[in-house]
Each structure stands twice: as structure tokens, then as C-alpha cells.
Image 1 (cartoon, one colour):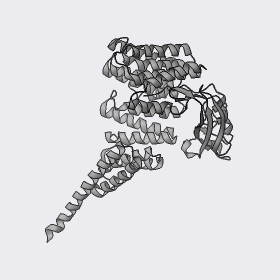
Image 2 (cartoon, one colour):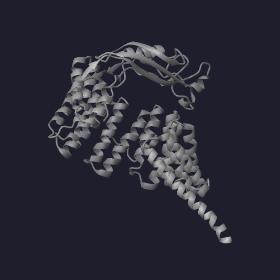
Image 3 (cartoon, helix red, strand yellow):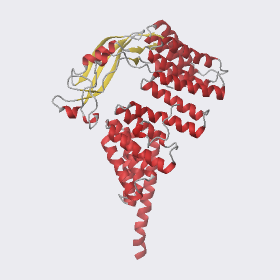
Image 4 (cartoon, one colour):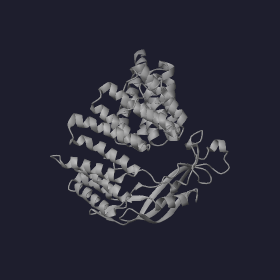
Length: 463
């Protein structure tokens, strides 16, 4: 009779292991299908099953806790994600030491959680810790660190340290140059990414240089008319447009279109992307007739193929805001822009303004009204003024721009409650101006290290 009693725990362990494996496969499938709420529930089950199998403090718990936290970030459960990432980190440190490579993933996740919460100092510290571990494990020029550097850039950007944020992006180019050589596809891709960063952060002259360097590599590898250079031309055109150099931007986009038209087989999707970029440029330059022509041509390129028609309808089926004045992410009780608080902007109450306009075929908005706002009236006037200077890509019907009523614009922000202590609220931004009165937001074309960081960056040289 003793033998069956001894076998029972073994059977239970095998059953738990089988259930855990089945749950893991379900989790992976749900994640691939982007069914994140269901994936989170299964991830929690995996954490429980792993604890029952191996113990709540075992190293086997690190990955399930990290997976659960990742789904929580996707669902904006930042507090839950932070707790589970930290639990995974604590387990790895206790069982494998403070420099274990298994710390990298939960540290990256923790850094992203802090960025989303506006806790940029904690995010910086988490990313820097992950970066040092990859240097210890794989050397200064490993590619694992590239995604960490992206996160570190976001943390520095949140701390208003643009030079240090940019240094992380430039260092990635230096890493690819050292690993792949001066004329490689990998280096061209790194330069393209750097150019996009420069465009995003308003460093337009530097963006010109990065995209031109990318194009030099493409020409050397593939020739002057290879379509691989089109994305660099689009990026370069964006940088000219954001500087207000409309003729240079239009000329660069037309060069991209000419390359595409020289190909033996037409790439309708990429051609439409360039045409839409040209249309957006003309809208911003108050040339609605030229814009309508380019949009109509893009419509034709995306017609006649079921898959592309779905993209066409997604692009042109509604009016899309393409440029306009910036609105603040954090405001004080008076509605003026504030910097993030010491504990992060997520510690502040959330506000929202929902507005509705009619968008004309020329991209102008009229008859704008506030539908809902919370707190009432805090940013209503700023939003109304901003929409008066906002430009839209109009909706198209059968390839022709049309008037669209009921176009909604939603702006979410954090606000400092009246009476909150200044030291907890953050100070007004230097030389703060009414955001609705600024020159305007950068155009967004359609999509298909500093001194104190010397120890973290292998090379901060320019591209």
C-alpha cells in the first residue's frame, strides 16, 4: 500500500507540469492574436502553477512574472506591472546574482513601465542597470543593448536632457559601423533610425545628414535608382518640410516618386505613401488643388487590389489631423503647461478634452465645439484655438476630397489640482507660452552619449 501513496505527489507534479505547459501555449497564442486581457489571465494562472511546482521564490518564477507584467503594461496596469517586474528582479538577484543576464528583460520592462508613468529618473536607472549587465555579459558592442538604448533615450527625453537622449541614438550607429563596416545594410538602417529620431526631436539639420549618409550607402550598394533609397528620401523630405523648406521637400519627394516609376514592377503601396506625403505637404502650404490631385493619384494606386483597398479606406476613410499647435501634457490649475512632478505625471489626476469639427476638402477645420471636458473649462479655450490652426488630410470619396462633419479630436493630459503644493506640482515650463499660439506641430508623413554616460556608451561619435 506504501507504493501508491509515494507515487501520488509525482502524479500531481506531472499533472501540474502538463497544465502549465498547456497554459503557456495558450498564452503565446493569445499574445500573438493580441487578445491581451485573456493573455493576462492565463499569465496569472502560469504564475500560480509555477509557484506550486517550484516554489514562489524559485528562479523558475522569473519568466512567468515578467510575462504577466508585460501583458499588464499593454493593458495600462502600470502598478501591477511594476510590482511583478520588481518581484522577478528580486528573485533573479537573490538566486543568480546582481549581474545575471536574466535581469535584462525585467529591467527593460520596468524601465518602460516607469516611462509610461512619467517616472523618468527611475526609468533611467532601470535602463542603465540593464545596459551595464549586457556590457558585462556580451561586451560593449553587443546588439542586445540597442533596445535598451532606445528606452534610455525616452527616459532622458522625459528628463529634458535631449543631448543625452540623442547620444544613445548616435551610439547605436557607432555600434553598427564597428560591427558591420562603413558600407553595410545594417549601418544604413541605423542611420535611417537616427534620422527619424532627429526629425522627431526637431534636429532637422542633423536629420538631413543622417538620411543623406544612408542614401550614400544605398547608392554604393545598389545604385542611384534602387528603391531601397526611397525611405531615406521620404525622411529627408520630412526634415525639409518641418523646417518650412517646402520646395526642397517637394523636390525630394518627387525624386523618390521618379525612382519608383523607373522600376519594372510598380510598388503601389510605396508609391501611394510618397503621393500622400506630397498631398500633406501641399495641404500645409495652402495648395488644396495640388493636394487633391496627389491624394487622388494615391487613391488610384491603392485601388484594384483587395488588400490595398483596405489600406486605402483606412487612410482616406476619415479626416486625419496631420499638423497643428502642440497642447500641453501636464498643466497647472491655471491651464499653463507644467513640467512633470518629482513622482511622475501619472501621480496627477487625468484630464481630457473632446472636441468636434467639420473638416473641409482643403484641410481646414470649422465649427469646432467642445463636446466634453474634464475638468470643465481647464483647456477648452486652448483646444478650440489649436483646432483653428490645425490642418487635416481630408476624407476622400471615390478619390475626391469631401467635407466631413463630426470629426472628433481628443486630447488627454495630467493636471495639478488647485491648492497642491508647488514643490509637488512641478514648476511652469521656462518661457511658457500658450501652446495654441506656437508655430505648429511637425508634419507626420504616413507610415506603411553625454559625459555622465561615458561608462555606458562604447562610442558617442557622430555618423
